[in-house]
Amino acid sequence: MAKINTVIFDMDGTVLDTLDDLTDSVNHVLELFDMPPRTKEEFRKFFGNGIRYALSCAIPKGTPDSVIDEMIPCFRDHYDRHCLDKTKPYEGILDLMKDLKEKGYKMAIVSNKIDSAVKELNDRFFSEYVSVAIGESPKVKRKPAADTVFAAMQKLGSDRAEAVYVGDSEVDLLTARNSGLCCISVLWGFRDKDFLEEAGALTFAKTPGDIINILETC
Image 1 (cartoon, helix red, strand yellow):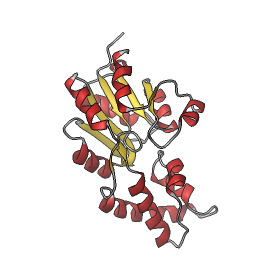
Image 2 (cartoon, one colour):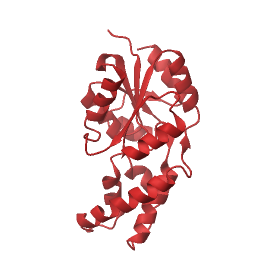
Image 3 (cartoon, one colour):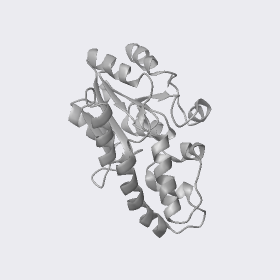
């Protein structure tokens, strides 16, 4: 059995606490379109499967898809300008990445967030440790398709026998499954343990430090 030497991270809810900035940007768009705002706890359940899905959950029922088409560019414009207002790494994530790098692990981030934002946030917070960051774009299918994971592994020179996936949602579980990777589900993100267990999660990290311990037993 190959030794794990590659860690593929989700971004939102896994390495970065982005919920406040995402909430603010979607509520900004809802206001532009004369729709009522939603709470941060509501958005916690909406995010994870791309902005179109989040908007479809946030808008009033019966709103035509064509309206979502109009809202997406407004969201992208606002979020590109405000994605660093409140966003920050979760406590312990930078220490985890430092430890992983010192132990020789390769790291990547894959996300359903817009590719430009993924790269900007990675450059801002993780460029010392993470060399590959891939987000949603017309060039690659978004999660739970395996395409972003395979693209990341190709750039890192890794294969699936050497890699593990780390995420916080049911989308991440499906992404790992579709990629043929084991999944470590984190408990500080956008979903709780009961929800993740119902979705099929088997391995959990209560803190970033737990991930090191799990990897060392792989």
